[in-house]
Length: 174
Image (cartoon, rainbow, N blue to C red; front, side, top):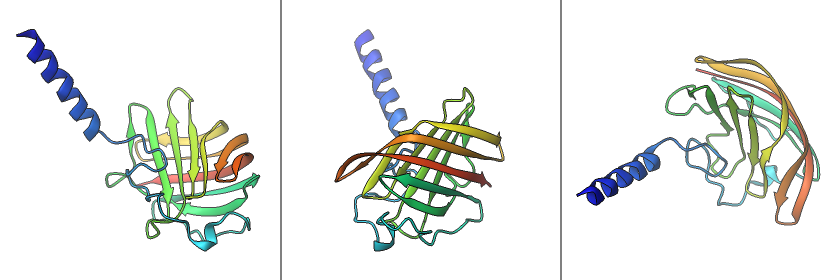
């Protein structure tokens, strides 16, 4: 009799894990665009221009990437599940153009223990998990804000692996 109980418990745990909110990494479906299509021409990253981003009603991120890949723009904060999302001292912050499924996405995870993460993707270039210096000015139930600087972060493109520096600031709120 113990085997069916263990099996049911394991299956229930797997179902709950599958239904739980994703970590929000680039390419996940949690409020972020699908990265499978080719990016729009204005997002090739070669120009380093402003890219036409815009601030959102719930905040935005402004960032600059320099090095083997260049990009400078502003992306609106996309609230997850209808509002700012913080759970157990961790905040999950996706920024993306919501009307452009071929666009770029920035994801920030802020953790109470200081192990914060920055990730970027645009369909041709990915920066999977940059180590950054953070200046968090707000991270509570109503929102998060701060700035960051990431040096010598790894970028991955079709042409190979490169190195970039990133700096920016963000504000996300309900």
